[in-house]
Amino acid sequence: MALVKMKEILTMAEKENYGVGAFSVANMEMVIGAIQTAEELRSPLILQIAEVRLGPSPLHLIGPMMVEAAKRASVPVAVHFDHGETEEKIKEALEIGFTSVMFDGSLLPIEQNIAETKKIVELASKYDATVEGEIGRVGGSEDGLVDIEIAITSVENAKQFAEETGVDALAIAIGNAHGVYKGKPELRLDRLKEIDDVTDIPLVLHGGSGIYQKDFRKAIQSGIRKINVATSTFNNVIKNVNDNVPFDNYFIYHDKVIQAAAENVRVHMEMFQSANRI
Ligand code: 13P
Image (cartoon, rainbow, N blue to C red; front, side, top):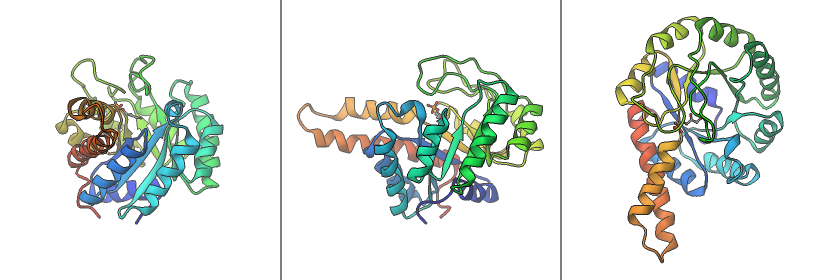
C-alpha cells in the first residue's frame, strides 16, 4: 500500500469505473484528516498542493510531510503537485518524492503548452512520476485572485495535446470552475464524452467543490477518473472552527480542523464511489 504513483491509482479506477478524489491540503491537520478517511473507507487517495498555495505552506515543509504520511498509510496514496507553473518548483516536488506533477500551460497557446508540457514529461520520467497536463481553460483560479473565463476544451485540441505530449492524465474544461460556483454548475457532459472517445488516458475534473452528485456520477461514466477538491475542504474547516471552538483551547481547534477535512473527504469519496476498493 502506501505511497504509490498516481498512474497506478488511476488505472485501478479505470478498471472498476470510479473516480478518485485529489484533495488539496494546506497543513498537517488536513493531511491527517484526509488519510484518516481514506483508511476508514478503504479508498485510494490523492493528496495535493498547488504551486500558488506554497506561500502559506512552503513546499520544503509540507511536501516531506505529505510524502511521509502517504508512506505510512494503509491504503494507496499518491502525492501530487497541482497546477505546477515553474520547472524549478516541479523539480523540487519530484526531489521531495511527489509521485505525480501537473504542468498547467492552459493559458498558453496550444503549441507552446505542448512544448512546455513535453519538457515536464521528460523531467518526470527521470523520477518515474506521473504527469497531468491541461488543455482548455477551467474557470475561476486556484487562489481565487483572478477570474479566468472558461474556455471549453475542443475535441481536436484534446486529441492533439494527449498524443503529442505523452501525459498520463489530462485536465479538461467542460464548464467546471475553481472556487465557489457563481450559479448552478453546468457541465458539458456531451463534450466530455466526445473527448473521452478520442483520447485513451484518464481525464481530470478540476473545480470539484459544488458539483452535484448526479453530475459527478455521469462524468465518471464518461471517463473522469481524478476529481480535484479544494475550496469545500477549506470552507468546511472554517465553518467547523467558527461553530465549535471555544476561545481558550487550541487543541479543540486542532481536532476540529482534522474532523472538518475528514468529513469533506468522506462526502466526496462516497460521491465518487471510491470507498471499499482496497
Ligand atoms: P475547487 O477549489 O473548486 O474544489 O477546485 C480545486 C481544484 O481544482 C484544484 O486544482
